[in-house]
Length: 302
Image (cartoon, rainbow, N blue to C red; front, side, top):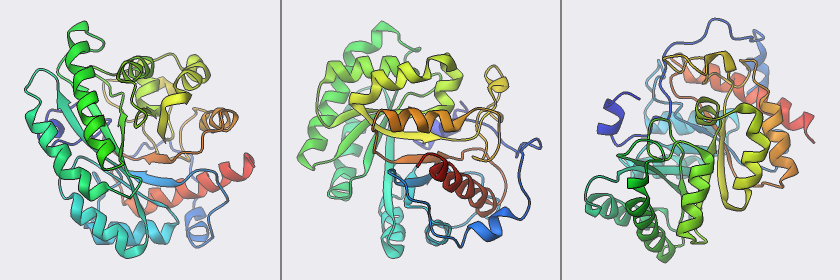
């Protein structure tokens, strides 16, 4: 993970640039799909990290208008910077903010992240926005992170409970919590009803055995608060970059339908985000195709 994203307090979630040339895309599909109503779904569907490599470099108002036009239910926000502006832009078009978050270095004093949390919580009150938390500072599952990690989440959960906000532990490659099973174990120790976990397909495929997906989701289900998905090729699991593990939803050989099928069996009804980080083309183009694929998947799973 490039260091520049930590400096920006952004959880860029996966690295990679460029649009894979091997995407299997049906030309002309997006132009007809983007004006069609969304297929019925048990899940709100939002776009996340779609703005980080957008060639058009849209501002927040333009991003919100685009998401509204394409049929998304809202957006996720990387970090906490410009959070009021993001909220205003989404409110203006009647969309929801589903995620906003923070990176916490467990080797440093907790004052700064707790103050950032305190400042953000009143903005999120009453919005059903999940405050995601990435815990870093130690190698993955290093026992030195156990005490400060649990204490930090306890403090954040208690602050958030006063504003009726939920927090979600975000497993993130190369950080202290990188695996879903570890996230579940930590959150179980915190044991607060407003503290749960987030399942991110790209990080799961990088760090865990894809054949365990059903078991991992079942173990996370009691604490599962949000999910992110994307097109992916398992052949990219060991790549130095992430280009093959984050693609538009209509690309890649990994069976995303299987993820949604398992979530349906678990009766998961929470939001599902479309992970877009690193897709360096006009975001309207790839979001249109991903929305078309999402609608198709929803129809197939009805």
